Image (tube, rainbow, N blue to C red):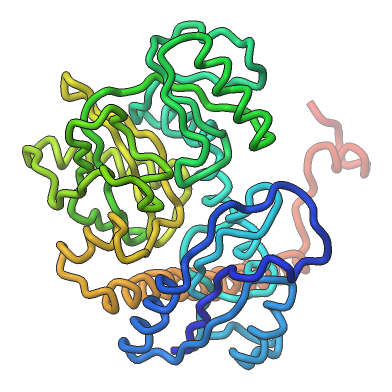
Length: 372
């Protein structure tokens, strides 16, 4: 199959500078690993820059003519976006408009997952436990009903950008002010769950597979939370990962059910990662869902897949298979639905030509008696 791996490395191919620049991108090594893994799996692969020229280049690569579905090709989406709001959604939306299949969540799923407040609202309404929270757009907002310590983070960022743990009101005020000023958005303020941290990788759609659970161990360091510095490997004491997590099977199964419920509530597709905390009493709380789980060599998702028996090549090829099957099922269902609609229309046409019995009001109007 033809697979176009799409990523961002050049931020200059835009029509103008507008909105918040995207602070994250995949490293070249991670992208090359995906390309190599797909080629190892037998796919015909090329690498594309996600910018305003993308659709023309994909049209040539897939040989599209606008007359039908590209049944022998798919985009492997590794794009975080260049600028603006809901940046994860930009390339999926372009591909939806152009009619090009792609891996990962739709614009809807990415938009919901990237908005941490909407995520928490959706999963809370679905019965999934999540820490109590508030949204703060001003530094002087009081944390009514919340107990310190509190975790403060930007509403629309990922990769732990702007993450701050605060213990006092003056620290909270400073953290909110920093987020509003630096990131130009509201802050999510939630109760900090002191305890263990576990992440669960998800793979699939109708039948969602939960990869082995990964636990982050923080040792004896002061900050018991996974920060941007940890994710960028800029700390000497970054947490270690243990997979599978040492948890009772019954409890682990409960966490898997919670993860799948989160995946469903946020309308994610193909693959994602759910991050949870477990308090000192053993109560789980979902922090967030990452609709584009990192495929970097040291990522929790990749580790979990390896423990499940995947090579990196088989993992990325499996993601392609899962996404491609989703399109095949949707296309088949669409053909069947169109056929059914066509049959229904023919049936309507045939019955419309037959004389119909006048209704009571019509009989009255036509002089055939009176309506009671």
